[in-house]
Length: 277
Image (spheres, rainbow, N blue to C red):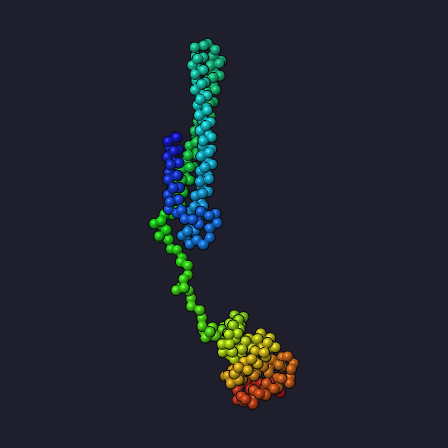
């Protein structure tokens, strides 16, 4: 029994030594390591589980030593009682003999129970060591793990150019994703990239969100950069309607009349006539 216990402990310390020699990296010994790769995270979790099992094994070993001490003490008592029994065999006091025999039987029963407990602890120790061995990740196994690599400059998506950002913002605008498109137009306008166009779209988004005062400001900026753009009929119409919504009839008429005189055959001009009548 003792030999079996020593073999188990030897196996455990062999496993512990193998784990240390293979994975003795500095940061992995920390309680809360950071910046670990996926494979290092797996190793750290294994080490953490093994540390917990080590503590459990230590507790079981201490318990085992305690029971062994009790068994050894009881074996000594049984030996002394047996000696006394042999001495009493030469005497005729049967009552004393029966008492000693009863004591010996009780000691043997208790000793047998302790041996059973020791065997149970040994089995548990063996099972825990098997678990440690089964959860251990070797270097060869690590090589087969599909570890996600951190993105490098080569596989990071390229930054969008200003032209691509404008295309993206216009596409979002046409889908009526105004909240997503607005900050892109703002960024481009602040960088003075096609300011007439970007301010026009900012005005349009403000117009459709019924922020008419903001729309007028953006339309004014757009015209200041370029007043011959293809979107000018819409810009003049929506500026006039914005003034209409703000109950500013004087400015409404100025812009709608400018639309009628500059683009008389446009669809926007037909709409403007309805607001002037």
